[in-house]
Image (cartoon, rainbow, N blue to C red):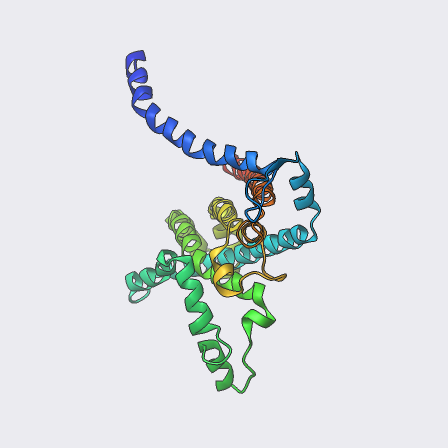
Length: 288
């Protein structure tokens, strides 16, 4: 049992790092809150003025905000569907004794280590290019008209790029959960002649439900902040602008620091609301 002296020593050792982390977080947040109540435009320096919550009102009533919110939700939902379903299928495949299993696992994990900007450039110029891309070549090979992804289905293209990056994460988490399944359960199901579909829905799926919840929680928090893929591929636009990109556009394209700061605070609040409900969901799941 830790003594009072030991606990005091531990608090003293951890204290400086906690203070640095607190300052690291609170200073940018405080400055953002301060700028969010100012009429502050970089094109008009020295003429800042206090306007209260008008920046928040303008941001929340701007039609671009609602369009960006819808795009954000569509992006998160699309990537989650692809990664959870695809991750489950890949986890089931990798759980089987196949030839070159180590190499296959390494190849599955590889996309997770590619920087978002690099992967977006690869997909844009090598895979999804309407003239020289791999998908265009495959379409021509079977006599189909190539798709101009970033013109005809830009949000779908972004979803595919981001999902490709997060699929390894979902696969690893679900594979770990799958490998913890009791071997006796598998053998009992095989002896009873349980069909594969029934085995999946009644044994495997309930077993990996908690892992699926963890994947959804972690991915959602990060997917709310997708930016690089949109900036590199489409550069925004009505079809792909999400909330982070909208904040960026207001700050660095329109030079409206006050409005962008208000948008940043709104984005933080929305992300925390989503995280709160997801944490409660995963808590109930773990208690079940």
